[in-house]
View 1 (tube, rainbow, N blue to C red):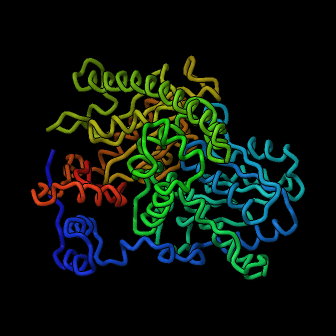
View 2: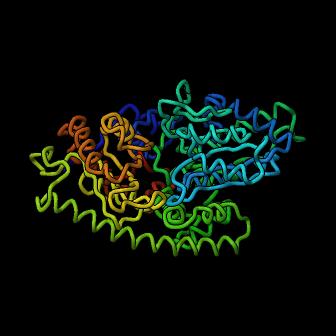
Amino acid sequence: MKFVTRDVPPRAAWALEQAGVHPLLAQLYAARGVTGPDEIDDALGRLLDPAQLKGAQDAARLLADAIARNARICIVADYDCDGATACAVAVRGLRLLGARQVDYLVPRRVEDGYGLTPAIADRVAQRGLDGGGWLITVDNGIASVAGVARAQALGLRVLVTDHHLPGPELPRADAIVNPNQPGCGFASKALAGVGVMFYTLLALRAEQRARGAFADGRGPPLDALLPLVALGTVADVVPLDANNRRLVAQGLRRIRLGRAPPGVLTLLAVAGRKPERASAFDLGFALGPRLNAAGRLADMTLGIELLLTDDLARASDLARQLDAINRERRGIESEMRAQADAIVERWLGRDMPSPDAASADEDAGIPSALCVFDPEFHEGVVGLVATRLKDRWHRPAFVFAPSHASGGAAEGGGELRGSGRSIPGFHLRDALDAISKRCPDVLLRFGGHAMAAGCTIRADGLAAFQTAFAQVARAWLDPAALTQRLETDGPLPAAYRRVDVADALQQAVWGQGFALGPRLNA
């Protein structure tokens, strides 16, 4: 491991201090690329203009028409925390803006798989939406070419809101809102799925204002949704650029004042956290895992209902259920982590062949990429185990489990579902794209980001995937990228070891791409 002290551009630090920023915070901000006080101004007025987000105005016009006609709307969500908060923001926000028939459907991870599939489109239509209803995806849909086509064949109108990277073909939806779609000039490509939906609502309200839909000329405030936006943004570990930091800061401000949906407050309570001292750390490591546990082991409907209810007693009951599921998840994850580590240890001890034995790093003896599978693994937890492997060994890592929706992996048949996590310098989704060209008959479906991605493969193609994954990693990663680094800000001066300084640090927004203190693998 190599220790690296972050550089502090003196001009940026000086400019921040001159603007009244605490000297320590000025140093920390400057070291993270902040060049002026406007970048840490978290006022709502500083948020990027929704009109800059490609597709948002088209979506706003279509939704305004739908609401005026009292059309039925169904939200199709993802089963992680980002998807759950995006769904709750969509349902709450559309109702605030006048929609009277809003429903939602969230696929089950094990039975349904990810995203808007043709089967999910069928289920939406069966709810009475065929023949003019609207289907809105949140945190998914950009790769759902077949699912969108099926929905439209059933008479549904489709709006895709997503933030994932698109594939070679875009779905032919009525409108697409995604900062990462071709031709979108929106300055923040790091919006989470919940952020995309929030921006869509901002555009919708602006459209309704222009049509004179509100008696007061302004329309309902949408800031009540910001605690949910903050939670989904932090839990999805998207980079906290200036725009995302504003969204998170505004959400935390309302949580600390007790102005958050009951579900957020009761989740804090079961986690033993106080709302008035809530931080981004609490969102990412206390609330996020409890919501995610529902999608991993049970049904994310439980989590979405928690975020939608305004009944404190019901919220408390649902939060306790999620807490119990999360404890079960921790037990399963612990066992899987131990098994995955044992597999890698055996490779390194050469007790069994490594899938990448020929590409092992000569100095560390560690393969350039890790890919493990066990028939007893739970597919809802593979992403967490991949994260642990990546963190421990500083290698891109994929973990596979049998896909029970396809009949598992018995006798070499069926499918395997995998989740991967990466290190800087290795774009995981691009790697999967390269693997799909090398092994077109093995990789069935894939999607994701640079640092996290998922895929489904044929069970009898695991060895071929392992080999291809190792080959791509060996070709793309140099020794510098394979060296784990620990970034720090150096020792804390004695003069700053005070409670007021600690409080100032705790009140600020920190997270992915804007870490406080040591950060691995920078």
